[in-house]
Image (cartoon, rainbow, N blue to C red; front, top):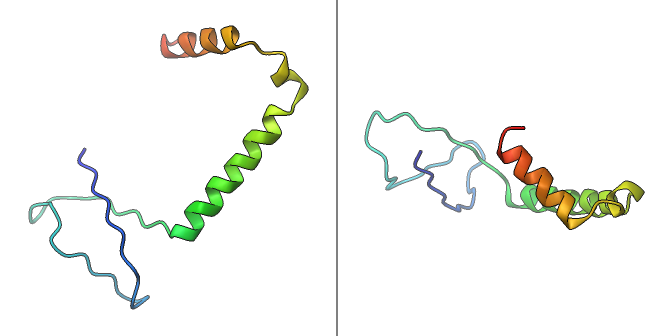
Length: 78
């Protein structure tokens, strides 16, 4: 899958025009629009969740070795 990213500023909320795209006529593409401020808010929300998770008592009992083994098992499909 070819991914193509472009940042644009919305001038008219009823219409968004993208020009000179690297796709051929008739090619099916998926369009996802993410507002910059929303993306930053979601990142901050995730960081807060990760900090909260890391403070849990059970998280402190897990060693780096156990984490590495869990990752290896997951990647192996176990």
